[in-house]
Amino acid sequence: MSEDQKKSASKGHDEMVVSQEQQAKITEVRELIGQLSDKESLYCSDASISRYLVSRNWNVKKTAQMLKQSLKWRKEFKPEEIRWEEVAADAESGSIYRPNYQDKFGRSVIVMTPRRKNSLSTEREIKYLVQCLENAISNLPPQQEQVVWLVDLEGVKMSDISFKMSREIVHVLQNYYPRRLGLVILFNAPAIFQPFFKMMRPFLETEIYNKVKFCYSDDHNSRKFLEDLFDMDKLESAFGGNGDTGFDINKYECTNKEAEPRAEPESTLQPVRRTHKVNFFFFIVFLIFCIDLIFSMSQVSKKAASNGHEKMVISKEHQAKITEVRKLIGPLSAKESLYCSDATITRYLSSRNWNVMKAAQMLKQSLKWRKEYKPEEIRWEEIADEAKTGLMYKPNYLDKYGRSVLVMRPCLQNSKSTQGQIKHFVYCMESAILNLAPNQEQVVWLVDFQGFKLSNISFKVAHETAQVVQEYYPKRLGLAILYNAPMIFQPFFSMVKPFLESETYNKIKFGYSNDHSTKKIMEDLFDKSILESAFGGNGETGVDLNKYAERMKEDDSKKLSFWTPVKSLSSVSHNAPLDSIRLDADSDASNNEKILVPN
Figure 1 (cartoon, one colour):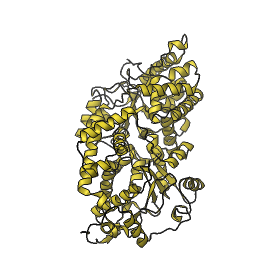
Figure 2 (figure 1 turned 45 degrees about the vertical axis):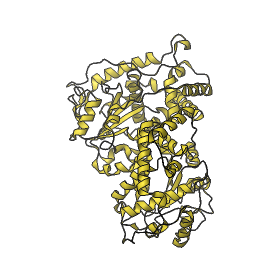
Figure 3 (figure 1 turned 90 degrees about the horizontal axis):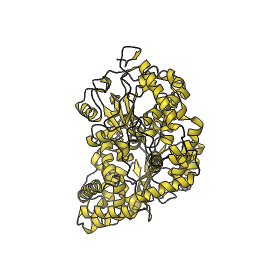
Figure 4 (figure 1 turned 135 degrees about the vertical axis):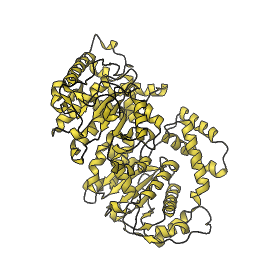
């Protein structure tokens, strides 16, 4: 775990600094939702509306719509009126409970032990979880809005998963408790899932990635992490603390009754039959979190899927932050000045939630990496062996929004050299960025899973690639289309949403060759006449290695020209993004040394 991850994980608090512009948006949301009852007004505080706005990327109309749905749900479900007697039968096993302590940052804690029995009724299970959440939120100190979930995954089994209940819980968390999750600690999780977790980094914002932590009982770093986060005398021994492990239903009943702010209504629910079927919601969510490369399509907005262009509108406040970053990074060489355009700094700021210090630190690390690794100086001859099978290449077309495209075919893995594969990937990314249309900054990944096997994956390469994308190419991924991905992962799709921002969630798309919706999405995104037939187009699939080599050599010459400092630094505009060089080479399709996609 990196120092940045530890800091983010231990702090956890989403400190909301509301600007005048954001306060105006809060006011607009209030106007759109209209007149409220006293109870609704109490719920719709500025902090609450801010959470909804952040979850909808400060889009006022979407926020108002989401908040209206939440108010409707709260009016009908009445989560604040759920009493202990209504959920006691579901609580007695201790599968979910709120312990009588907080973390050192004031966040309430919810403990989950999936191996323990739970109720058969989805309705009851959701009601109990909502009751735990409401009590956890009501016990938060001032200025704190988030909850920590401690999940003991000892002894979990995939066969115990209830997908129906998990989907329902995800729906509640996603739509009615936005931005409430501060941190999830997965204790003694099966080690097999950690490599998948590392693979997903390119598709997750840092804030989201840092919300999920692995801890193990025999790991020194885990103990240090938990000591920084909790009072070890109170933390249960199951999580490495000195407190009692176990669940006293009688004490917990008293605690819950004390936490209830209103008189208790008569319970109309009857005890339910118990079953060995358990809710492994967090286990599943983590698994999904780790393999979210394979989600999206059926429930994602088609408009979001087809548009994909992230246009950056820089306000005066943001421009001031760009200037602050320039001051912090200090004097630059001519080449570094060319790299550090306003557009580039904006991407770094955006990836660090407009925190100037963090953005400057990240940019300094990128400049150091670029100085040592020299990605712009990699030439075709250095990566030709890696490229020869067609594992990854840049086709000679853009999408309809001017984004460069990288095609990847995991089944054509041809090298065991991690260093060589990373260099090939960096070379392709640099060429893709060089060929972006004006005012476009992002790249589309087309990943063909035809013939894919799990053995094609190199976890070490995946981890290294993820680190490169995350740290040195922030906000460059516009869209990843996973074509004919294994269907086995789709049941996990609907459960990842609570942990992903809408922007991140919409960057991953599923496509299938026999699906009508996929065909429509691909037609909206690409010129079908040149899109390869492997992705549903009319173009030839594969790449002519000789023509591709010539085109990449032309790119190499353009890179040399682009990155060679000319005249003086005064000739370099801070506003000039690294894009706009279009290629006009002929199609790569021919009969000579053609790399074909296997059946």
